[in-house]
Image (cartoon, rainbow, N blue to C red; front, top):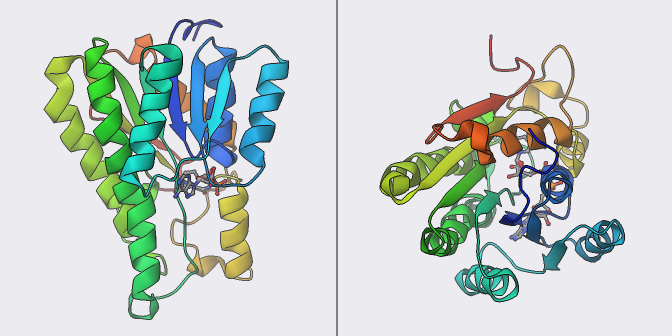
Length: 254
Ligand SMILES: NC(=O)c1ccc[n+]([C@@H]2O[C@H](COP(=O)([O-])OP(=O)(O)OC[C@H]3O[C@@H](n4cnc5c(N)ncnc54)[C@H](O)[C@@H]3O)[C@@H](O)[C@H]2O)c1
C-alpha cells in the first residue's frame, strides 16, 4: 500500500468516532483521502476531526444516525456538496447487546440491533451506491463479524444482524459489478475496542458467554482490521468483489 494510495479519493466511514471506524478514518486520511465520517458518540467525532485537521489531514465529522434514511441521504449529499464526488465507503457503525439466550432477548433490543447493524448498512449503501456510480464506480467495505457465518450463542440478535450484513454485501456485489463498483466485507474476530470492553464487562469474565471465542494470541487491534479494510478498498484488490475477509487471528480456524 503506497503512502499516498488514496490521494484525490473521497470516502465515507460510518461509526468513525470510535474503535475500528476511528482507525479507518485516520488510516484513510493519512493515505491522502478526504474522509466524511459519522457516529453517535458526543464529542469524540469533533475531537477526532480537530486532531486530524491539526495534522493537515482532511476529515469532516457529521452527527448522522445510520438508522435514518434521511440522515444517510444527508451524509452522502454533504459529501457531494463539499467534495463533489464519492469513491469509497466503509459501513462500520454497529452495536452489540447484553448476552442472553434467544428467548430472553427483548424484541426492542432485537429490533434496534437489526436496525443499526443490518438496516444501517442497507440505508448507507442505498445512498452511497448511486453517488459512486455517477462518478464512474468505487469500492465499499461492510464490517460484519465472524458471527456472520455461524451460530451466535448468547448473541442471537447480533449474529442475525451480521448474517444480514454479509448477505447485503454479496447481493450488492452482484448487482453493481458491471457498474464498476466493488462491495466486500470484513469479518473480524474479537478486537480491543469499547464494544469488546462492554461485552466483557456484561458477561463478568464468563468467556463461555462470548459468542465468537478468543484466539490464542488475544484480541486484535483496530489497526489490524483497518489494514484489511484499506487493502479491500485499494487498487491491489481490483478484482476482489463479493469477498468476505476473515480478520480474527485464527479464532474461527478451528
Ligand atoms: N470489537 C469487536 O470485537 C468486533 C468484532 C467483530 C465485528 N465488530 C464490528 O465492528 C464495527 C465497529 O465496532 P467497534 O468494536 O469499533 O465498536 P465501537 O463501539 O468502538 O464503535 C462503534 C461505532 O459505531 C457508531 N454507531 C453506533 N450506532 C450508530 C448509529 N445508529 N449511527 C451512527 N453511528 C453509530 C458509534 O458511535 C461508534 O462510532 C461494528 O459493526 C461491530 O459490530 C466488532
